[in-house]
Amino acid sequence: MPEQESTPSASEAELTRRNFMTGSARTAAATAAGFQIVRPQTLRGDNHEKLSIGIVGCGGRGTRGVAEAIRGNPNYELKVMGDLFEDQLERSLRRLRDSDEFEPDVKKQIQVAPENRFLGYDAYKKVVDSGVDVVFLHTPPGWRPLHLEYAINANKHVFAEKPLATDCMGAQKVIRLAKESERKKLTVMIGAQRRSQKEYVESVQRIRDGEIGDVVATYANWISGPVIKGADFADKLDQESLAWQQRAWYSHVWICGDQIVEQHLHNIDVINWVMGDTHPVSVVASGGAVWRPREKLYGNIYDHVHADFEYANGVRMSSHCRQYPERKVRRVNELVVGTRGRSTVRDLGTPSKTSPYVQEHIDMVASINGTGPYKNQALAVGYSTMTAIMGRESAYAGIEITWDMAMNSKQNLIPDNPSLERAHEVPELPRPGEYEFI
Image (cartoon, rainbow, N blue to C red; front, side, top):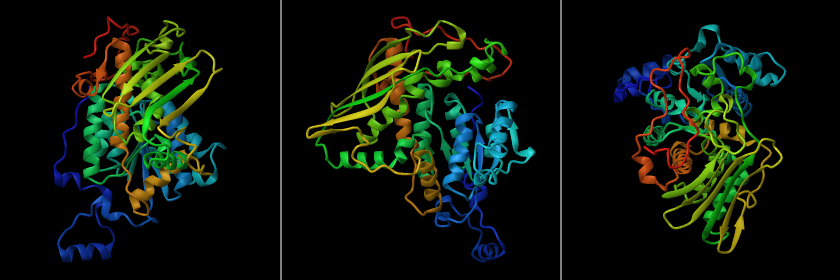
């Protein structure tokens, strides 16, 4: 893997930009009482404070994520941007600041000076170290554990896209970091927007309160058309290079995690949430690639996985994700069956007029400034990330995978010392009986 960062000492960890008292009156008071450090949680309560954003990963989701955050929080300002590729960063900046795609209230909060635009594999460090208040992590998910580690060690509030890892060791790290971020009272929101969608929030609570009786079975589906990255530049880059795989990231297991991890995590996360923000103890899965051609553009991911998860109380989750060549079928949903009824996990709540993509950022800022409840979703979605990885690994290897096996796995898919110029071998499509779970 890329170099690992050492954990700062307790005194270093608390010396972040937002942890100092500023202004002459505050400075005088602090001097009189002896130097003090203001912890992040003691700043909760000022909902008029400007919050600066630094984003790592400036693709389409990251660009929209910044706009959605500002729509929900006019005190947000985008100050710093980082990406592997200059063209992607500049395109994102133009969309946010100059195009007609976003409204004026968003555009005026885009204040990224030329010296605050960082490129390359270490761009995430420069964004985190720039002094911003909140770090947005929107790169492809293979890099999420490394970037999250650096941000948490720097005591930053974080918004991170899902999933949180693509391999077992990455998910193990995220689970450890999640517990550390809770200890520090950092706000960490994840792009699992259903957790901020009113009808889901209310439905989950009513299910937990016994509205449909005891839960006896659950179902999760993501059946839709394909997601293929890289088609627009298939002939423009060396398809053996790491640079091309970064562009065509969805097609490669090491950086996307396969469909069950990258997309279907949403539905799996809802069921884990219903079950008490816990995780299954075991899974048996099957899958493969039926229609995806054996071409570099399509990488080495499956186009379908079906998994039978079991929780500690014996309840099962039937999980099905599938891509078809054309988007003629779409079933993205959940179902929970109880002893006295069933729920789609939306039908027991009241729809909101606010987009959940905006609401999750409203909730985040309310957590930071204290006008709402404290939010930290890292552990729950970390569990869901590992759940999805378990399902993938069971399908690949053709064996039962337990939670303990996953938590003790030495699987690490991330390349050491990455370079955009060098080649990176793409393993063949996994075949049960030949593929080995590590």
